[in-house]
Amino acid sequence: MKLRQLGRTGLTVSEIGYGAWGIGKSEWVGATDELSLESLQAARDSGINFFDTALAYGDGHSERLLAQAFGNAREVIMASKVPPKNGIWPARRGSTLEEVFPRKYVLGCLERTLKNLGRETVDLYQFHVWNDDWANQEQWQSMVEEIRRSGKARFIGISINDHQPANSLQALASGLVDAVQVIYNIFDQSPDDKLLPYCQKNQIGVLARVPFDEGSLTGKIGPDSEFPAGDFRNQYFAGGRKQQVWEHLQRLVEDTGITIDQLPGEALRFCLSHPAVSSVIPGMRTPAHVAANVKASNRGPLSAALLEKIHRHRWVRNYYE
Ligand SMILES: NC(=O)c1ccc[n+]([C@@H]2O[C@H](COP(=O)([O-])OP(=O)(O)OC[C@H]3O[C@@H](n4cnc5c(N)ncnc54)[C@H](OP(=O)(O)O)[C@@H]3O)[C@@H](O)[C@H]2O)c1
Image (cartoon, rainbow, N blue to C red; front, side, top):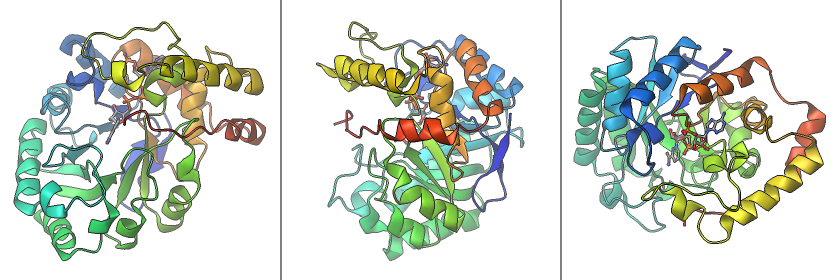
């Protein structure tokens, strides 16, 4: 497993990180704690040292599983997130800082996260939604400085709203943000435009999330796929969307020569081909998926010729709405 710098933090993170939303058993249905713990152990045994979780993932369940798996081993780097107080994902334009991230609420959530993780400090603490109108507000800036001074979070991050990579640039310009987490995959290449060059130039860490577009870029979702009752993918891939993603995928494989079997690995390598990316964080609830995904690191970046073909398949849309 190759390692990369997380921006200017001094943390060295595995190129493949672990996305721990699915194991929280809230919006994703089907995980068992036994298998999730096996997957976490398999990830660690394969050299993964970076784990991304959130208080919102099963109301702390994902965080508690991480604590159960790793205790407070310092070499395991943990990132978590503070959920919006008003429960609205993503943050709406016009929503105020006071509605979404009031100081007392944020500090209270941080305490709950530390208790769940069984740690005195979390390595990276991320705002789980964002609205760049807040970036220059004194209340936000002083809160971030207070958290950092307290030592309860070593570094501060923003998990950027779905498909809005530029809705973070003001916050980054404040110098107070150490890392961003952003949707970046073969379909949504929009971070290439401004965000990734900015982060590279200014040494801000980048976590590439949803590398498989919630599964469509694994090649395993077809027009007739079904998801368990209550699973959020019933909405994400509602109506004709399974057909749409399948058609896009067929064009992608025909044009690039990537086979369906190669697709998950190449989707991860696509993310890692951009030097601004510190770690790509697929969700993987089974040891088999962990074993398959870690191989992408050793295979290095995609060739320039293949990247050029993939760039023609940029397809930005918002299925979360
Ligand atoms: N707003 C936010 O901050 C936000 C939003 C979304 C996601 N995230 C973070 O990003 C992480 C990744 O996103 P995600 O988990 O939603 O979606 P994703 O990584 O795009 O896709 C996960 C899906 O891919 C499957 N998969 C993984 N490896 C595979 C392989 N080698 N072959 C076939 N299928 C494979 C997984 O199966 P199994 O799980 O069944 O193994 C799961 O169904 C999350 O876990 C979370 O940490 C953050």
